[in-house]
Every structure is written in structure tokens, then in C-alpha cells.
Image (cartoon, rainbow, N blue to C red; front, side, top):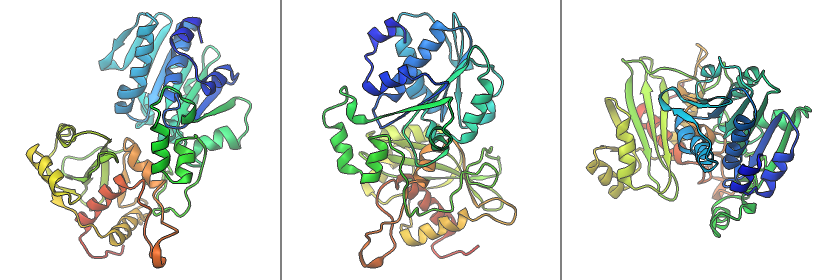
Length: 396
């Protein structure tokens, strides 16, 4: 890192170790608030300011790119008083040594084209492996190098590349939220009080963990036969929405489309904490369409506030056991090779919850019920499926 950047940003211990790590492909595997994105911005600035060649910054969605990764990068350039030209409509930043391409990982093929000297992939665990494979193919100039920053999400493709393969080009540093002295004093303790031990190990300490007893073990990331696929919503498809209320926990809205064969496509999500209902309503109304219904949790006051803000809802059928079985039924691969529930890659929080939503091993009386965590998008999805498939079992 150049001395000017070091003067602006004091490195945390894990950030310092990663900076000194001499590897072509670096991984910062860190907990929430451990300084991953800030380090990514510093590393990217170092690449474009001190080396010739183009680079790329990638986040799972454009919304995450614009709200987090790009903000951190541009704020650092401003503090360093380095000139740049940001072309928002083209998703480009022009600088003296090259161009920075700004891209979303939800449509991997759009990463193809530019020859790159460096690339930073933020929140990499929310991206598919295909994104990393394409980026490697673009890193071909000027001793090209790559950085990924992420909170882990199980033993996924990142674990495979950086731990299992033991390749000389790959190196990683694990950072904990606990070492970030700039966080509020009670930030970590509040997370510890809310999380299970395994989830705290992942979200706070940046460790790879596995979640035993997944509810939706059928859910697959396979690029050919799995449930995560890129698609376009057709004009003749019916549109619907599902909402789960929350404030400290996330408020979730899922947008769905139903094709002529009754398949449900989840094409977008809103997943946000600590916002007023009217703020959520404003975001919901930005996504245009003629929605046949919007199904939600039963909270009377919040439904009334949504209604006043212009978003009408109907009450969800909330039987958890039946709803889970109906979602499972839709996850089954049909004779034509496709499931009856398909998720767009931009729905990163919904996809993440599929990998964390698990059965409660301590349920009383041997009752089969899920753990009440990582279930906010799961609930919104279940409401949609229950509304679409009715209240009785459908075996397919």
C-alpha cells in the first residue's frame, strides 16, 4: 500500500497480514465488520494508482456494488485527492493508469471481454463459482492479481480453492470482527447474544463451518441442473410478491413470476434491517408490475402501514410444516430437467438462507421444526408457495 493510503487508513492486524502476503490470489475471509470491504478498496486503489492496466470491481449485485464496494473505493480516492472520472451510466471509472470496470456477479457472462491486470471480488461467497472462473480468465496482463473479500458461507467453492487445493498461487487471511476497534463497543456482544455458536464462528470469526440438518437439502447450486439460474421475466407471466416483516431482523420482500406451466421464478429481493415501513414501501413500489397478489405475515399494524403507503397485502397461510413440504416439492427436478422453483442469482440473501436454514435438533417431543434463525427470506418464500399451491398437499 502506498504511504499516502497508509496515512489515511490505519490497517487492522488481519489487514496488515493480508497486505504483506505475497500471493497472486488473496482471500480475506472475515467476520461482519472486520474491515474486508475497506481493505478491498485500499488494495484496488493501490493497483490502479501504482500499476498500468485495467481492473475490475465485482459485487454480487449492482445494488451491493453501488451501496458498499463502490462507495468505499471512491471515498478513499477522494481522501487521497486522486483525480478520476466516474461514468455511472457506463459503470466505468477512468484514471490515469487505466480503467476500472464496475460489474455485478449476478450475470457472469457480462464479466467477459476486458483484459485485466487486477480484480477485486467483494462478498465472494454470495457469488457462484462461475464468476471466479471467468475472472481468472480475464486476469492476463501485467503480472495480473486478484483479491476476494467475503464472510464465509459453509464449505463452498472458496474453501475448495483456498484450502483444499493448496495451490501456491492462493493465500488467505482470516479476520475477526473482534479485532476492529472502530466498531461500536456492543456490536460483537449483541451478535453473540443473537447467534448460535456455529453461526457466530462464521459471521464473527470468519471461520468455515457447516450447518448440519439443512431443511432444504434438495437445494442445489449446480450450474446445469440446480435452482439458481439467470432468466428474463416474460410479458405473459403473472407477477406476485411475498413479504416478511422485520426491524432488528431483516424486512424481506421477494418478487416472483409464474409461467404458463406454474413454475415460480424469484427474480428480485429487498432485504434490509432497521428501516421504517414507509421506506420499505418506497423501495417495493420502485419495482413496477401488475401483481396479482402480495402475501405477507399477519402483523396488523405493519400491514396497515404498508396499505397506507400504497402496498396492499393479503394474509399468509402460515402452517410451517405444510409450507416446507410444498417448497420441497417445488425443488424437485422434473422430467424436463428443471425444478418448479427457480431463483435468480441476484437474490443473494435468499440463496444464502437456503444454505443455513436447518432443523432444530433440540425440538421438544421429537417434533420436526426449523431453528428460528436465517428464516426471514425463507418465510417470505414459503408464504408465496403456500398462496400459489393452496393449503393442501400437492405431490408431484
